[in-house]
Length: 354
Image 1 (cartoon, helix red, strand yellow):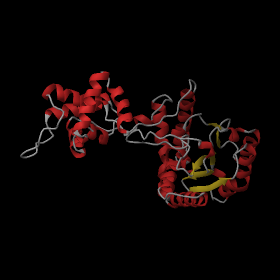
Image 2 (cartoon, one colour):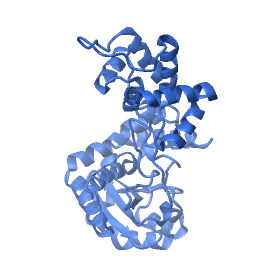
Image 3 (cartoon, helix red, strand yellow):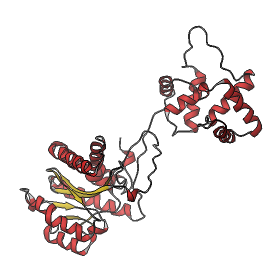
Image 4 (cartoon, helix red, strand yellow):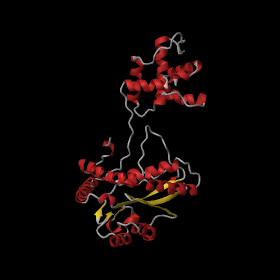
């Protein structure tokens, strides 16, 4: 931001730097003196270097045709800036270098700097990779024998929606072009809703809204009164598989017993007929697709009340359910993910996807 400073501010910075010999101390004194955000360390060093080179802190007067910023020195400055601080935003770099935003982007392309988006990966415990590999190999084998298998699986999960605009990160992976520096405070006390939904090639089942903590008793009641009757209304119910993760409420003896009776040999979960590998949100459409899309649709409408939040979630689920081609494509994409999981021997693969 050195290009936006007044001459007396530049002189103040130079005097403070001579006294402290430390840019961070200059920034601390700036806050006390000017009661505003201080210039960056980079800007302070530029003022010092300019004075040592020219004997002045003032900007040189501009005359004639403005010169292009696409010169070697600025290319080197841009490259150096992002080598030192790869998470720096382009807007921040533009202010610090005193170069227009459009020129900064142009120079970044010229030195072949490419933006990347960090991905959040589920931490794996030592035995997890082997379990994920076993599941991937088993399911790929089943799919080869039964090509329609992925059309017969109902994937299910719960997510916590907060009125503040937060979705439980366990249920939804986010991608950001730069660190948003978001801070969550007293999240447990924020008003919100806990939601269950299921997804298959046939569309979406739900949503179901829980008014209280999802215990084993509450979850079982939901399965018996809503989820399973909804699935039984489908023509291919006898061929369906049911998937759930290993959440404590899902693992109760009463829940497992009910699923054993309802889907004999055909439910996927913790201690299920088919063992679901723990910490594997990258393998279920509910996590790698569904909740993220619902969140985007819901919070794009900016709900202000729990009633609106509930209504918008219902609308978003219905919109996804109505697009059967999308539902089928997403469910079929599990096969590709299973293969990618197998290729890395059960390890992370999300960061390798193009």
